[in-house]
Picture 1 (cartoon, rainbow, N blue to C red):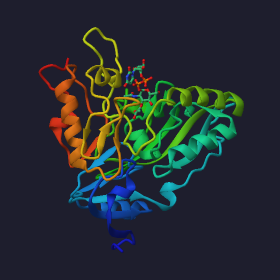
Picture 2 (picture 1 turned 90 degrees about the vertical axis):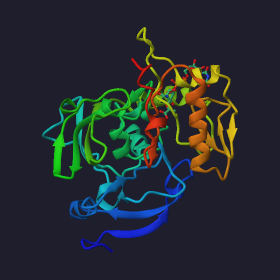
Picture 3 (picture 1 turned 180 degrees about the horizontal axis):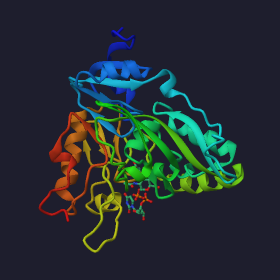
Length: 304
Ligand code: EPU
């Protein structure tokens, strides 16, 4: 236990990621603002659903913070002061709340705006931080207020205060999305379900193995068109390429999958192969712990 009562334990991080890779590190389970402030006194990283993350085989030296307790609870009651007839603003939804259960609950309530994120396995905090989404919708399509813990204290912002865009919120890396209020449109369970079905359909061909999801963001070509990173990697002939027990999926080339017993080093090696073989500069969508700028950023000379 820490001074303020946070549970602190050394744990293998592989079990907290959808890829199933990552060594031992010191995990802080924080359930109050006070515990969070204490945890942030030393270098730290924030672990959400671990669904877009590749953690090195040796773990990380920093504290790994995980939101629990009230930070993993949700209040979907419309706020009477902020809601109107058709627009609903909810109570607080914790950063540690799993996104899939939230999306399902909103469908049952007939509340629309976030159903396009169906199938994304992360938690609310991480999903907001990277503005996770699909072609059918993204997190910033349904946010009213975002509460952020920073090294300088807690503050509340609206999407208008942030420089958000495709797969980015503009929230600095070491700031933690502790809770949000959702902005939703009153619809019907049937209509929300129909939208979810469309997004689900688009995901049909994706691999079923352990994976952190799409490896690269879809790049924008010099002529302004966005192209599918998966299509580019596929066209480079890389589907099925294997290093150790990691493989570029044969179903969709923007997915790296763990065939069982893969290491982070295997995954890094595959990212290098993709960087080398695909001519178009692409930005990594995964988070790498620790950072590997040479794998993350699109080559500066070519990126425009
Ligand atoms: N394609 C290929 N070969 C491939 C993969 C795709 O030819 O190996 C072609 C498809 O046939 C299709 C086009 O590329 O014509 C687009 O593919 P898809 O519909 O799968 O969309 P995407 O742009 O590759 C995006 C998101 C996915 C999301 C899907 C479905 C990004 C980087 N990816 O993929 O998100 O699931 O749309 O909505 O934005 C993720 O972010 O982790 C992720 C997987």
